[in-house]
Length: 362
Image (cartoon, rainbow, N blue to C red; front, side, top):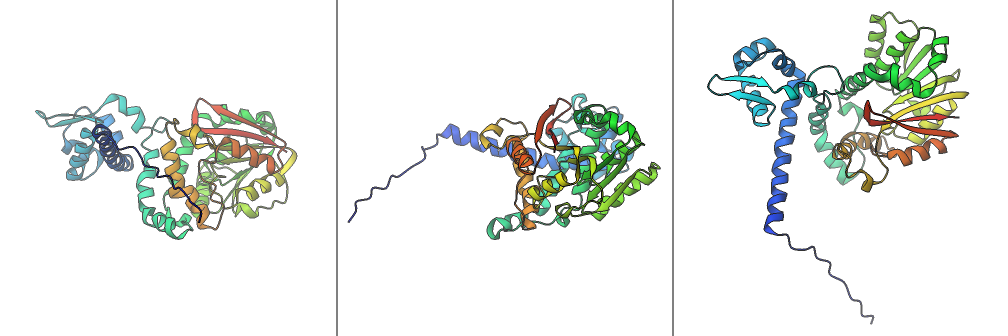
């Protein structure tokens, strides 16, 4: 009979101070996640913009200016005051948005993080399905996220309006060609704002947006029609089966590859859809493929959470690879090379630290 010694690995006994610190961390998470929901309401109802436009005012005046119910507004203001967003003067009964918060909760620019916090209540809606998937496998459907396309579109529009033409597009080296006239495709175009913006800027070129969401494509077509654009079109398409009649000079994909069911096939299809001298611009999450490198990333916890609740989950829900949001620059580069691209450059922009920009050529 063999004598087998089993080592007993025991965690060190926590100290009272360490337990209190852990409890404090949990209470902080409880408070912050709760306030995230109130921030979402403030963004959706325009309360932040209303507060920014008013001097210190009572809840009745704020509610009236926003066209909202006073009782709800007053409770919301209590939460915002407790979170330090709003100053309250009890002797006057007035509230005012602290000036340092104005740029990060209002306006169309990239500084407005209230827009990003819209993901928090959306993830909460699918939490039961995700918890079930932990037990049974599988995942979620894109239909489980009715506002996801719109939230994504509003976020990307802020970046694209500020930087697409002047800063992002020059990374491809295609600006002069676009002025002369080339063919461009966008993979996973969503509500199509990027394509419409480029179509308006470069009328000599033609643009095609592909997406699987009919609702998103309807919004894209409506925007194009309202702008009077005749050089852009949008097609309902599963890009894992993408086939094109004519190859494109430039293909783009804005945060659209990592949640595909079969991302390797999509990248190969993009490579096949390009002319031999064409260019692929892939914009995707700026992170490492190694967890240990991401620990200090300011938004790492959000990335792993949104991956669990959406990007990985929707891929697995389609029987896909479940690549996940944080596939990282190393794996993304390897997959581009495996797809047949011979040269891949990875660039970063100060204007958009959240994303990495891959310029790949056949």
